[in-house]
Image (cartoon, rainbow, N blue to C red):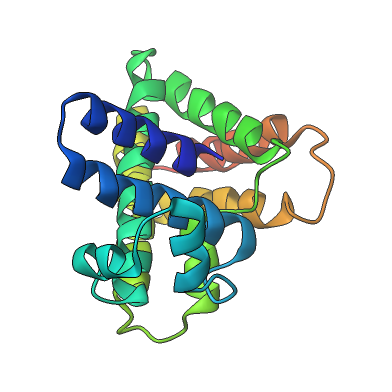
Length: 208
């Protein structure tokens, strides 16, 4: 699971630098992230995180004053990692259509992994309907950013009304994240690309 691995890498790097306090924080966050993603945020208690991370409960509450704060940190860390991943995929291509195809291909591959349990941000909003929850705020901002980035790509392609099409392609992506948990992978990347290209073609055919 990418989130846990990323967190553990950060923890190791901090430990090598001799900063024990940062190492403790990252160990807690990496452990919580892996458990939250695998088992669900409501299902995982603070005691389980303490036991698996090997830190004292007082240390956990020193860095994260509440479980909600820890959930928000989990969402924030995923958000940062996701956009680093996104930028890395885009950096390999100059043409905006090629960037979009590469992103949709990579998303299709992500959803086919054995440890894939859906989009962490969507999972969070499903578990926490309260719009005031700090983690939900991060998740909503993440999805808003997705639409902004798609809009920029589509505007570069030259489609009419890129904001409307960005919303439609975002729905395709989120649909892939959800359906991957109940349906076999088949050719999800190809389906995403075909659907996005059909929507783009329809927009390009319209007068501006």
